[in-house]
Image 1: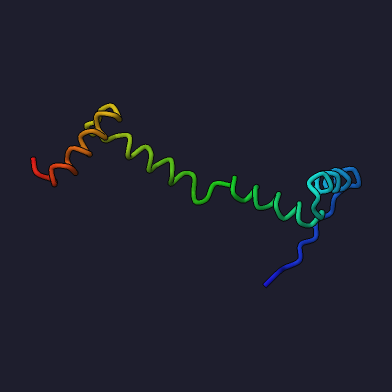
Image 2: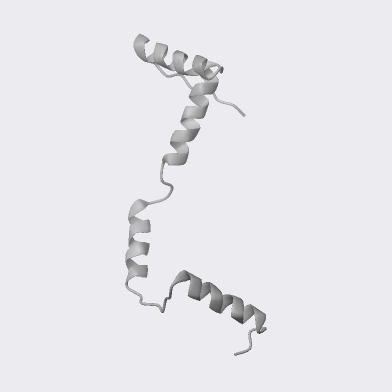
Length: 85
């Protein structure tokens, strides 16, 4: 189902939107739909405070680590040995 959205713009703003749409060879409505889609993708989803808390909790842990090439080599060796040590 589609819904209609009405947005009031001042004349200079509207002309700017029209100009942007024309330069991309699309209708004003299509340009606005695409601009809204881009804005939605840039908007963070979820509660930012929850995300930050998850990062803080994870940062409290200490796990063994190595250079990426060494880790990948060890993983590959594990696959080649069939998981046997």
